[in-house]
Image (cartoon, rainbow, N blue to C red):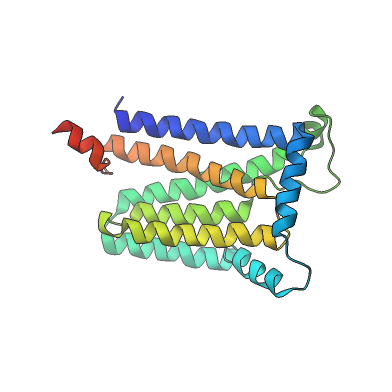
Length: 215
């Protein structure tokens, strides 16, 4: 297996392990749960404050209507830049990451799963954050379809969108910090697998360092 592909697959496995570890710590470690709650409380905005309104605006960027707008932009950019394979990869990341997050939310909120760890939460568990997953997946999609010369601004734009939504859902009181981190790991898992597949198929360039070693 190509070294670049192998490293990407290993990174994907690390992301998957991180998602599982966070869930286990959230359920099985009162110390971790307390740290998570404290970190979240520090970011949480007072109800009715301007900071809460700003957080809400950030979180709303991952609501259905803005997301549809972002998806249309991805398709338009991919068509303009003639990047069909990268658009297909972006679609896999978006669909795969969102489906994974929604599945995890169902599993982790199930009473039998909670009971297996000896805990029970009186509210629905929202691990990982669906809004953060959706926003970060769009960001990865933008990075994938961007030609090499536009990769850096695409990465910055995608990171800004993900950060705005990720911080927003915590500030607005929708999620714990661990929910946001878990969402980032879910997206990272799918992103690594898709990039590995594109590299293997010859539709994605390898890092310069690996090219230089081949010369």
